[in-house]
Amino acid sequence: MFCARIVRSIRLFLPRFFNNLMMNRTFTMIKPEAVAAGNAGKIIDMITSNGFKIIALKYTRLSSEEAGIFYEVHKERPFYGELVDYMASGPIFAAILEKDNAVEDFRKLIGATDPAQAEEGTLRKRFAESKAKNAVHGSDSDDNAAIEGNFFFSGRERY
Ligand code: GDP
Image 1 (cartoon, helix red, strand yellow):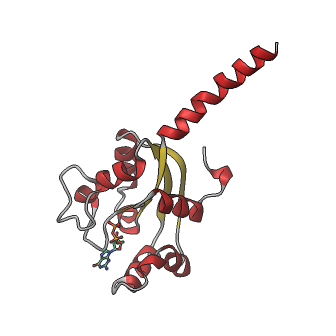
Image 2 (tube, rainbow, N blue to C red; image 1 turned 180 degrees about the vertical axis):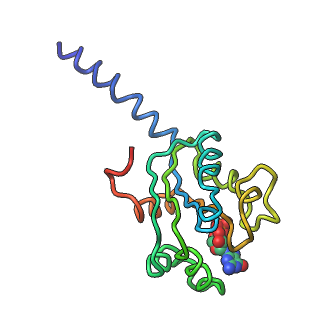
C-alpha cells in the first residue's frame, strides 16, 4: 500500500520534473506598427508553427511611463526617448512562449535588430519596417524573459 503510493507519486512527479528541465520560456511583444499593419495573426501563426507554445497572451497598450520602465536598461542609449514613444504609440500583443531552448531559438526566429541585416525567413525580415520599428521583441536571456513576463502577466494568466 505504502509502496504503491510512492510509485504513484514518482510516476506523477517525474514527467513534470523532466518537462521543467527541458522546456524553457521566453517573452515576446508584437510591436505597435506590426499590429497596426494587421500582421499580428501572421506573426502568431509563424511563432506557433515554429514549435513555440503560447503560455500567456494579451492584447494591451503600454503607457509612456510603462514603456519607459520596460526599456529602462536602454535609458542611456540615444534612441531611448524615441523607443519609448514608439512602444506607447499603439496597442501590442504580449506573450509568454515555451519551447526547449526558447530564448535562443526565438532570437533566431525574429532575426537581427535591423531587418536589413536579418536572414531570410525571420520575422523581422518579413514584417519589420526599420531598425527602430522592427515588429517583434524577444527576450535576450532567461532572467530577462522571467522579468519581462512578470511585467505583463500574473500567475493565473498563464496556462
Ligand atoms: P533587440 O534585442 O534586437 O530588440 O535590440 P536592442 O536591445 O539593441 O534594442 C531594443 C529595441 O530598441 C530594438 O528592438 C528597436 O526597436 C530599438 N532600437 C534599436 N536600435 C535603434 C536605433 O538605432 N534607433 C531607434 N529609434 N530605435 C532603435
